[in-house]
Length: 230
Image 1 (spheres, rainbow, N blue to C red):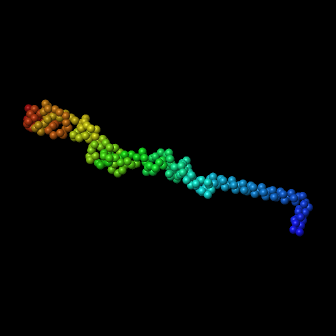
Image 2: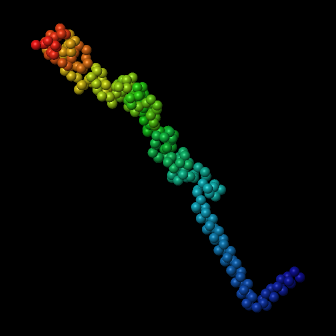
Image 3: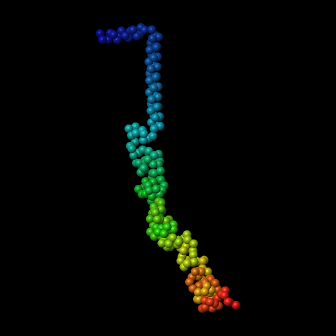
C-alpha cells in the first residue's frame, strides 16, 4: 500500500550503522548553525548601515516619523516644532536674530530689532539730517548720524574745524567760539585801527583791523609807519 514504501525506508534507516546516523545529525546541526550566523550578520549589517546613513536618506518608508518631524539640519528643532528652514542649522525658534534679510528666529518677522537707522546725507560729508530709514547696511547717499546742522554744505558738520567766519562750522551751537581775536575799528581803511575802539571779531571782518596805533583814523595818510613820519 501507500504506507509500505515509507515503512521500508524507516526500516532501512534504523538498520543502518550508528555512525551514519551521527554523521547525518551532525551535518544537519552544522547547517542550522551556519544559517543562524548568516541571518544574524545580515541583521547587524543592516542596522549599522541604517544608523550610519543620514536621517533623511533613510526615507519615510523605513521610519514611522512623518516628514515634518525630521530634524534634517540637526539644530534640535523640527518643522513640526516651528523650524522655518530645516536645511539651515542657524535658523530655528530661539536663534539670535541677525541683520541679514532673513527670519532667523522663525517668529514671522525679518530683521526685527536689529536694523539700524540711516539718515540722508545730501552733501556727502558723512553726517546726515532729515528722516531716517531702517536697513542692515547704509543705503546709497545715507549716513549713520543725524547731526549735520547744514546738510547742503560739506564744510559744515560735527567733524569740521570751527573757522572765524560768522558760521557754526562744527555744529555745536556756537559761532566762531575760540577763534575770535581782538580787532580795532579802521574808519579810514589804512589798515591801522583806533586803540580807543577795541572789540572781538575775525581778522577779515570789514571795517576792522588787528593793527592798532592810528592817531588819526579819519585820514588814511596818517598812521604808524607812513613815510615822512617824524
